[in-house]
Length: 436
Ligand SMILES: [Zn+2]
Image (cartoon, rainbow, N blue to C red; front, top):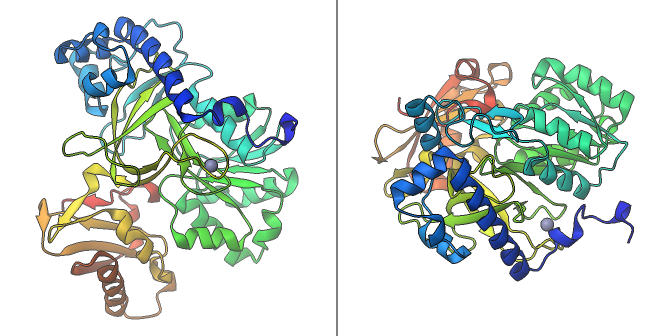
């Protein structure tokens, strides 16, 4: 099969048998440790404090048993304590660092990440676009809200795909549609939840046929939060194939393949552990655990045993697409989990039902967590006043019933005009769990 028609950009790596993949990981890991323990002030300090030295780690097993964890708070604390803008990840004069990106700050103030050219993010996205059937010489609409906009553009350019960038706002939708009609792009990134809603409203108001608009687009990368069944159905009705993506522990991203059976994390570039957040022991495939990630490729950004706070389910069995690299699904953030009558609830458990009603299809809501453990699940749900056709109490009652059926706990909902909720920030960044 010629490369142009192969679904894999890097077949030898993407389909490597697991045993071989793990030997490959071990070799790369030991080299990353050599580098990080010499060059990263944060990793040096963290390992010293834990009483673990480079000589203690000779295998993957040693690493899993002994290596200390780091998290975003460690990076921020090191930055503040040592007045070190890179949080101690890399030396300030490291010649391999040629860009600094900062996270969006969803869980605190933004975290700085030193980046080098040709990082694992670029390689990962290049494989994803290849899998989606996008080829050099074609065009891509790029409208991203993430801190990775620079890398999103360079990953496309390096593969020979021509990005057409737009700001991620509803005001850009008519211009994006015009560009799609003129350039006939084959790729679109990033279809966030709000972006799909903006397009939905645009098509309702303009009368344009979504199928005709998106006819040239072979795949759209969708991210920001897990896709709901309703949004998948909306994209299906436009004949637009969505490929869900999510952060793979800030080291890179994981994206669905054409089998849509979970997000592939490329394990030749980063190693994943899925651990019980209570005792840090590995959980079985399919069980909920915290994703802990270790870079194997970019030692200038030594996220080593980096706790992501993301609760995921992982699957290490071979995918029907032929790839041997693990797949995962993000279920929520560890910090957003709450207990109601002893039952663990995550925002994702309620969002999909809220999106089913027309007045609340934006899925804007907040869970009110007054105490670590509660007897009733309290929520504030935003409604779109322009499509409201029934008394608010009846809408709230319908939602309470639906959520009670999904969660199995009593639910109390306060309805609020979604314009009020949007004052808290852009739609994809409204805190899903709040104290009051
Ligand atoms: Zn696959």
